[in-house]
Image (cartoon, rainbow over all chains, first blue to last red; front, side, top):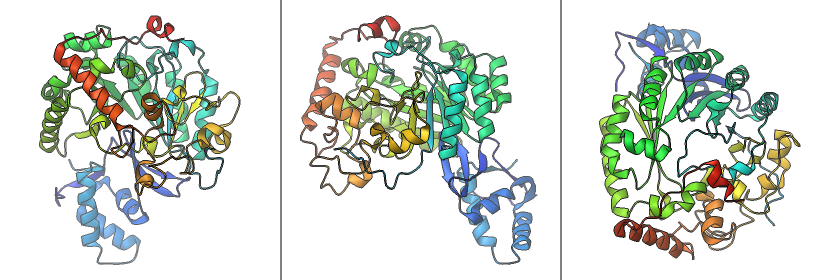
Length: 90
Length: 375
């Protein structure tokens, strides 16, 4: 599954992204399951608020972390996220 | 002596709250203990809130609200609301029986995350027969309502010899109902399923045929529906890593407040499982004899003790070892390395013979009358 660059990306309404104090990390919660996220994955998912396209998300993360060259990593991760149903496009 | 060493204890992640043993259904494979009717005391609302708060503080994040039928608790919404406030992801595990649209909305408002509805078969007559209650059409309506109100919908079908021939229809039904997840739970032979095993355990050919159908379907619906396939361990060569390791992840609280390392552990002798009325969750998890009993590897016998896979499957299921080999320290008999593997073959042969001769004893349904015969 690939990301459609024309469409916005939102976090799935049937999953929950949450900070877990006991685990000192963000997790995705869904029926009877949990995925533990590293810091960068969580930052990418937090940008998926339904108002931005892939390019806008990449731009925002580049700006936020004062860096460049993350296009491939972000795109690759979001494709995995889409396959797993963590994010959706209209 | 089983572990008294409480170093390296990981925090609980999963809390299974069995709110009640009351249930309008009578499924003959129910995992509740046979003598459930002897434990009719139920924790009150404030007790459950305290348990949830204490377990959450330790790190529990997934909450299963189960039973019996949890909908029979009038305080379910209040418990759900408390759980949501604490940050749990709450899963309602229900037969759907008696669930109205009004209550689905009230639970949603209280912060419930997900509803798992169980259906017994793909046809009304068989589903109603297995449930011991006319409920099939209502369950299908409930599944539609669950979807309508934005919950992820998990459909759970327990698979056994009475319904395994319906596998293709069960999959079609799941698709028509719009299930996001389908749990195909091959019956695990504890509790009521254990005593009904000759009538419930499918033959190897039936398993293989059903599994092939499910596998093909899984590929067809990839991306739309996730399938959880609970493995039929009698036909596997290796035991399941039961509960992800004893006292590592899962905490079950029975309706009367007894804390269990797994929901069948009540059947094991001499564990003296502690009650949340007497101890905090932290004391129970870290210090109780029951939760330390099978932690680590010290308790193991051969061939587990020197097995290079013991870190993967922890010797399998303690309850199965007890039920089948009569020794809760034994290697799970489903393991091909177990000196008692022949017990599994005997069970398979016995069920097969029953199936082929049509010489079946009637199913023992799970109800209070039958339960009272076990204590």
